[in-house]
Length: 66
Image 1 (tube, rainbow, N blue to C red):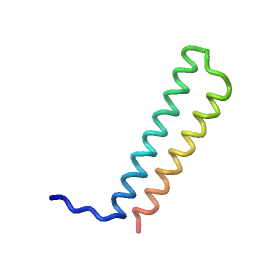
Image 2: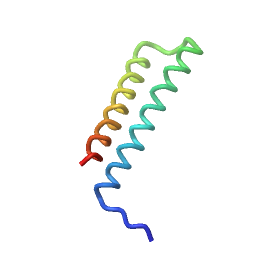
Image 3: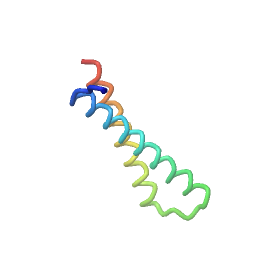
Image 4: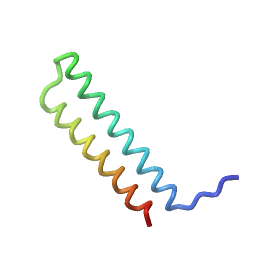
């Protein structure tokens, strides 16, 4: 049985959500550029997802150092 404390689970969750947000944001941008049918709001949303994803990854990395 694997014992993981609450802090580690929170860090892993932040990392996973950060990765998902980055991936979805980049996919929206790539599909939008390939199809040339994405409105400007779609790119703003994708940028926000990437920004949030990077923030979550940085927060997890800084918290993990302690």
